[in-house]
Image (cartoon, rainbow, N blue to C red; front, top):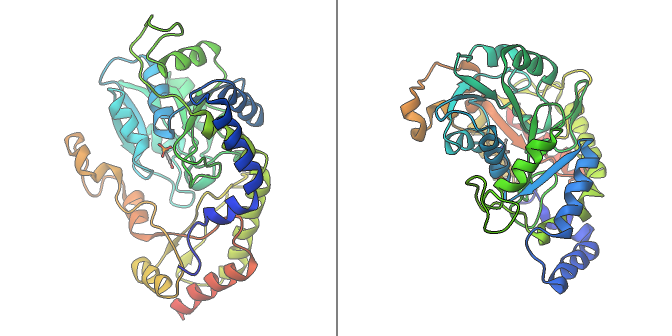
Length: 367
Ligand SMILES: *Cc1c(COP(=O)(O)O)cnc(C)c1O
């Protein structure tokens, strides 16, 4: 690809010396699992997000899973999740022994709202998982208000939204807990898998810290059945270096989005991402709704331009969830989005010229 969807090599080269030094320091220490690097990352990221506790773990999927396990809800209790999200949001609910109940999303923001969540509510609902999809926060004020009124736990899936904020606060710091992912393609990405749970609740943080090491603080003494979901010191060292650049990268992504918006505003056939007033979108993805999406994608590929489809299949129609009884027509917005969305390159190092070429290529397709 001439213009890839994401270029991690460019990012690495821009801060190579600092990253190499940080990695080597961990190698020299031979302390690879949890330890001081992980504690430092937890403290620094918690401070960055303005939340008192951060608990590192093995992935974003595990961040969701550990938070859901910590709930201690009756097996089979229901957790409402959007049908339009990455699989892990629902997979974690299932693996925690709970029942995912799907809901639709808003057609402009691609996010759940209090109304779409409430439509899926039953007396068995114990938690909701609003996803801040593509880097823009879901409307947390109304979601938390609904959950408080109905007595449910709010777990923010902030995997794509580190550093995002809105009038309601910072992503991962508004609900009862927040789940972050350090998968390499996320805005704060490690050299492999990693994740973190945020919370304001000290008791919950303590429980999470036990769950990630087989359910005990003291070795060989287990208060609950946890798992091995520790964060590597190597990942923490890399992430601490990258955290210092996160605001700059977010600014570059936002500038790229602004350029696309200016260049594509009059192109009928693509609907640009809608940013809610007061929202600080961090654009993990720049996702448009495109007429003739698959043909547009083919056209871009032929021009050497990378793109992505996030996501092609609604979760309520996934084979593995057939037993939950989802059927086509259940969530019309999600189903339409899966046919129409296309994500264009937005990574920080992209630059004005390449954005111009992507925009020109999109325009050429429609004219
Ligand atoms: C990436 C992602 C996850 C899972 O994170 P991993 O670190 O890949 O396990 C969960 N939810 C959403 C919305 C994601 O984008």
